Image (cartoon, rainbow, N blue to C red; front, side, top):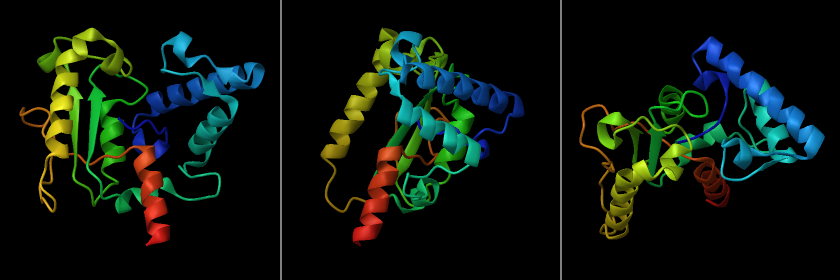
Length: 193
């Protein structure tokens, strides 16, 4: 799922305060050591360099998710037209909890996108942010996603299918979503077109 910490995507004041505290700690680590050891802390798959942490912290302070050149990524979400599947862990209590992810994904209004909250119901446990991709108990989810990727690559040109189904459980699909790479691509496409 998307992981942009902006106040508009975090309705809980208590969790927003916690996120700001984590960002302050990340900033202190980055300034002191040139990076945040995200991998060692089990908060990510790679360490976060100082420049990224500064930018992430600035987004949170200003309430604007923007490029260093000032391009507004949140506004660009409405221009994304590629299919996106957003998957969140029911056990993610901070990094990209499902409600925050859903609020973020609602900003994309023109793309065929679905959201799935992976949980005890389909995996036997409530995965956190990184457990979605690192815990072997998530293998059934990985298999379903791989099947969707195969399905998407074989869809006929011009298909009007609007939703990728990960789960047929009611309430598990139907939100709109994007990641930052898609937002950047949309901005580039808008400039070229």
